[in-house]
Every structure is written in C-alpha cells, then in structure tokens.
Length: 617
Image (tube, rainbow, N blue to C red; front, side, top):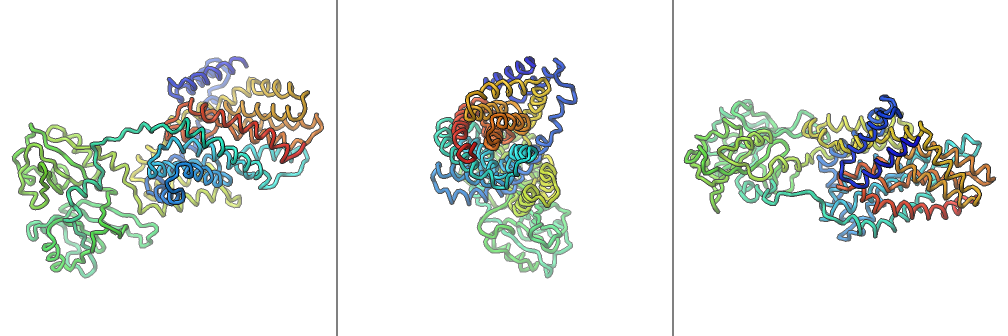
C-alpha cells in the first residue's frame, strides 16, 4: 500500500516541477508499479485500451476536421460578433456556451467540439488561447453537474440511492447544484485567468513568410487570371491540353483545371484541382484557370465557345477576387548566385517538365514580370512565383543547390481550410452529438466518436489520412493511458479505502456538516490522482453508510461525492478535458495548481454550505 502511495507522491512532485515531460513521468510511474509487482502487465496496460483513451484519440481527429474544414472559424466568427471587443465578455461567453453543451454531452466530447472553435476564436480576437482553454475545460465539468447524464459520478450516486431504496433522481435534480457551480466558477475564473493565464503563446511565426493570399496580391495574379467554363456546347471537349496548343495560338497558359466530382448533391460536393498536364482531357463542367491578356482570353472564348466567368470568383465562394489552394499551392523561390540555371530562359530550365510546376511571375528587384515568361532569362537574385501541388513544392524545397524556397509553404498549406467541406463536418458533428445525447440511439459514446472520426476521414474533411493522424496529440493520450492504472493500484492495495475511511470516520463525531465536508474534500483529493468515476464508486457507499449511521438524509452526502468527483481542477490528468487542453494551451502542471487549486478549494467551501440548503439533512 505505502509503495503505491510513494510512487503516486513522487509522480505528483515531478508533474509539479515540470522539468520532465508529463507523459514520460506517467510511463515511469507505470513501470514502477510493474517492477514492484503491484500491477500485472495486463492491468498496467489496460489504460491503453480504455474507452476514455480511445475516445480521446477519436475526438482529436474530429476536432482536427472541424479546424481543417474552416467550420471552427465560421462558428467562432459568430461568437466573436456576440462578444464584441471585450475580452471579459468573450471569456464569459465561452464558459456559458461550454457549460450549456456540457449539460447534455460528455465533458470530453464538449471540450473536443469547442477546442478548435475557441482556438480560432482567440486567434480572430488577437488574444492568447491560454486565457480561454483552461476555463473551457473547467466549464465543461461545471456544465456536467446540471443534468443526470452530464457526468458519470451523477449516475453513480443515483444508482447508489436507488439500490438503497430511495426515490430515483430526476433528469434536472442536479440543475440547482450545477448553476451554483457555474456561478462560482465564473466569479473565481475571471480574476484567476487574467492573473495567471494571460501570457503570450509560444508559437513562433516566421515573419519573413508571406501568406498565400499576400503572394497573390503582390504579384497581381488575380488581375491576369481568368476562369473559363466548359459547357456542352464547347468544341474542345475530349481534346487534350497538348491538342489545344493555346500557348502558341493565343499566348495564354492554362494553369489549372478545377473539376467537381460526379455527385450532383451540393452537400456532398468535392473539388478537385489538377495542374494542366499535356495529356489532361477536357471534360464538360471543367473550369479552366488561364493566365494572359484579356483580349486573347476573349478570342479563345469566342473560338471555343467557352464562357468567361466574371469577377474571377471561385466556384464555391462566388464573392470576390480570391483563389483557393486545396490541392495546388504557390511559393516563391530565389536563385542563388552560384546557380547553374542563371542566364537560361524559363522554358530552357523546364520547370514544367522536370518539377511539374508552373512559373506564374518573376520579381526582379521592384519589377514584376508576368507576361511571356517562357522567354525570360533568369538572373541572380530573381524571385520566381511558382505553382504546383503541395508535394511538388515540397520537392522543390529539397532542391537547394540552385535556389531556395522562401518562407514555409507547407506550413501555409496546412492553414488552408477545405471550406467546401464545412457542411459535411457540421453534419457529422451533429450526428455524433445526437448519438451521445439520445438514449433511443443504441450507440455507446466511444462508438459514436469512432464513427464520427472515420466519417471525417472518409468524406474528405482531411487532405489525407496522414493529416488526420497529425491532429492526435500523443503526449496527452499516453499521459491519460499511463495514469489510469494508478487508480487500480490504489484500490488493489487498499490505499484508497484506507485514506477515505481515515478521513471520513475521523470527522463523524463533529456533526453532519463536518462529515459532509470531510467526504467532499476526501473525494476532491482522491480525484486528483484517480478517475472521477472510480472515486465516486469508491466513496458513494461510504457516504451513504455514514449518513445512515448518523440518522440524516444521505442525499446531500451523495451530492457531495458527485460534485467533489467532478469539480477537480488542480491536476491535468484528473479529468480528460484538463488533459485535452494542456498541449493546445501550452500549460504546465503548475498552471493547473495556480488556477485550478484555488477554484477547487473555493468550490468546495461554497458546496459545503450550499448543498444542505438545497437538500436538507
């Protein structure tokens, strides 16, 4: 027993110091439990197959898709309009919205849904996401106290009461308690978050890197780029790009072909961007992106019966002079003074044939060359704006003998949202929530999350499967998976029972208030190290028995267990939501101590006095 307690104490110390990564500390603790034969290998590794851990992985993917499709940005912009420019109002709005969702959806699911939205919200409001993410996690737990299904400890105490012959609790029996928790949390988090969570994020941005839209504007690409639609009357359907030979005939260059999928249903529509390969066959419904002089554009449109799309708008946005970079991107490359390519024309260098990229423009000192690029000779210091698939641009980046790729094009690519997929992501998100909330849908929460994560990948809400895997924060996953068996170790060795019995029975002589306070803070303490569900299961019968022996109602005592188990904020691994926001907010263990511990203590003091008023002894 004492070995398990010592391992737990040492782990807590290392977590607090923060010199070693939290997942490494958790794994070391797990190994020690194995070495001292406190847990069997099957027991020690059980955390990695736990439904909570699997759900976390799935929720990372779902959250990543909400980000990647631009859905987070859309929702956050609406919330930002409600909050205005007030940072305090924004924090208040995040807490209230999260708590409202958390009343009906698991706190882990709530945080996963809200996390990408809040990160986007913070970026749009130009404030540090650190200020909002920890309150987000705490608010999800507060919201869980409002309904019977909000958090597992609520169901545990309801089952304990029913088993003892008492009336079952109604769906909204917890609502008064949840509202008190929420009010207390708001009053405490407002000053604490401002004091301890206002630090700048450590994300380093490359100031020399230009955004994709900045490059488009700088080179005036939109002014020389025209979109021509291929319809059934067009006389070039079935012909290849090489058959058209429009470079020689018209002095124009087909940069890209935009093609919708076979589905006519707009909701399931997807966009395919293709570079105009010589063998590419023109199909009805294609959109040709052609650069050149407008007089020649009108000529080819008349000759081939193509329709010029006004305003240079894209197929999806239809509202302005914008370009999309879903599959194809742009980047700048600068030629080295020692380059072998100097004094050769663009056509001679063969960017199109060797690297499968187009040259859209040349920046020479303060001059921009956009016409007849194939005949232009390259000089030392010239900067070329090239267009190609993101993979081909990455390949250019590796060819560093003759040129250097400026900025971080692949980093910019990761910021491009697949906004035409936002409706699909929203539908999948709502489906997941419905499966979690409604009992008549016979699907477990973890199953709902796995289904949602798979649908996000299969419906193209990510560029590829690798992009989905990159959204998973493995540090948080390993942290939770390695710490879950700790609760089993404490129960197996009798440490949990010893701690709870000693504290609770020692306070029984001082009256029901003192006993209830002892139960609450014992629950709160244990939840810092073992799961809130396990703590509730352990202490609910003790609370019931203690109240029965004193001849008072067990209801406030059991509510003390439920609230104490759910309102644990002083540790990143006490609840999955706390762990979920840890990497995104760049928090350390000490941050949870600074903000969460005072909130946890104040919440406990308030509850000790509020619970007997709401549910008399």
